[in-house]
Amino acid sequence: MEAHVWWTPLKLPGLEQLHLVENETSVVADGLVLGIEGSTPFCLWYQVWTDNDWNVRECLSPGWRRERPDRASVHRWSGALD
Image (cartoon, rainbow, N blue to C red):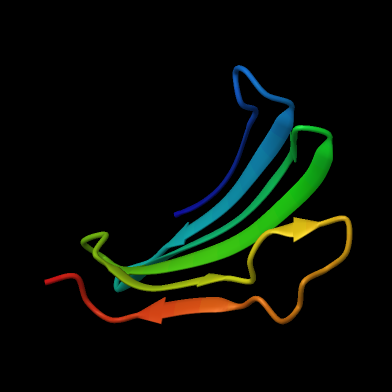
């Protein structure tokens, strides 16, 4: 299964996009959030990997980006939630 989903927040300006790919052994969610906090625009890119039972195995997010890219702020998590 493969899906592209778009939605907007109800109370704030912004947009979120999700690309979801599911196969026999895993699910990958790849998303992008765009918005404005106060008067500052931001974006956030993320990826989440799960097994086929939707147990999270790894997450990746380069961090919030405001006005200038913040390439030094990369967050990665991996492991099982048992």
